[in-house]
Length: 221
Image (cartoon, rainbow, N blue to C red; front, top):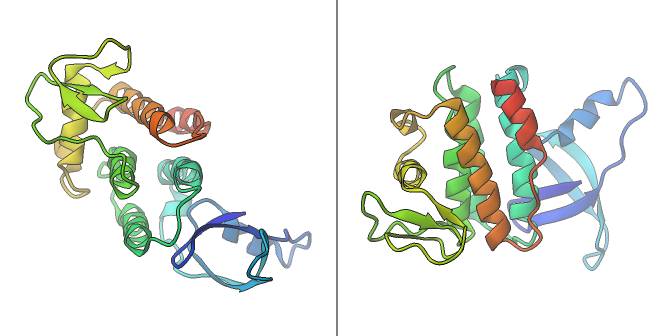
């Protein structure tokens, strides 16, 4: 199991699934985006270490019981497993992820439909690939290869039209608390999420098409 740790970044560990009914609850600790504390066991040079004394560090109150929030967590977990694959210790990023999941857990219905889009854009900033909005003007388009907004599209197809580019800028300039002021339809959210998947694929080595996007779309539909 790959774990994003506060001190060492993304680290692979060996986790032994319990086959007994008594130990089944331990298996839930490796669900996507679950926050755990544990002891690391194994040689410092070992590629795969063991986990012991695993505990649920900060249990969610609502997220696991809300189908929409759970689907978002599943997608985010898959997204981060690739986006942060080579990431070393990054405490500000770790803190952002933790605070974001707290916000999602506590959010009321109707408040979090844009959450995953704002979250992924902020992650792009932490890993240094965020689209640069300096000099943006209405009508400009996002050159996804360059990560800049322009009124003179380059001669390649990876250009986001002006309407969607404006929505990306709105999301980048928003916070979780006011992001709903940038109204999006379900189809627009779906399109922006797939644009972001393509954007990460252009800028992060070996980044794949995220499979759980289909699950998220089905839940929201």
